[in-house]
Length: 184
Image (cartoon, rainbow, N blue to C red; front, side, top):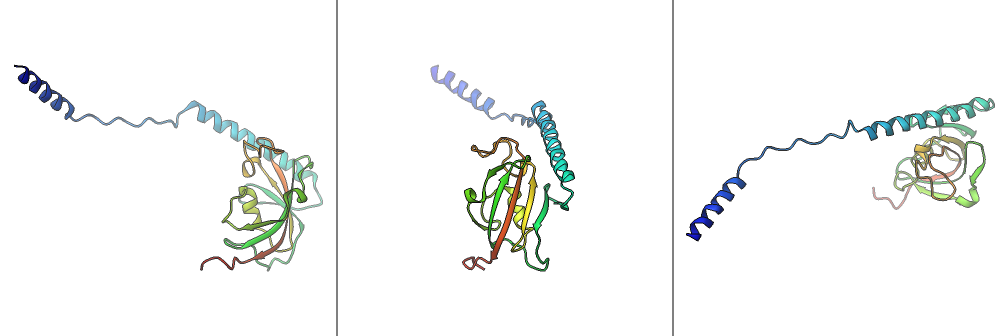
């Protein structure tokens, strides 16, 4: 008798367990209030930073500023022959730079940052500087005005650069060499 009850329960459980269940629909978070607020907050932050940068550009009537397709502005302190090559992926760029805030106060000097050896697009550096280096020619000095999202963003550098701080980089590209150790 006990065997029949156990067999019946087992068959019943197997039958229930094998019935086809309907798939659950994915939950969409695109309508999330937090995301909408975050997007609006970031739009305001970027607009405010762009206004500050545009004010700097307007006040500097001695230089011509260029707007990059990547969202930053720059001016040449020392421009060289435009027929010279710019760095490409895999080249080694030798440069130094200093970082200032938008009030032109030095945050990091060239001496603190030391001369740099950068394997173009193969090393991790801030995105603004990564793109800026590829615009330069050997011997040029260029000042770049970066909104915060192209440098240290919402975190800063945990030292001297604060959260959401737009920055001025003055970069001198000393040399460009191909990486002779790179595999062809």
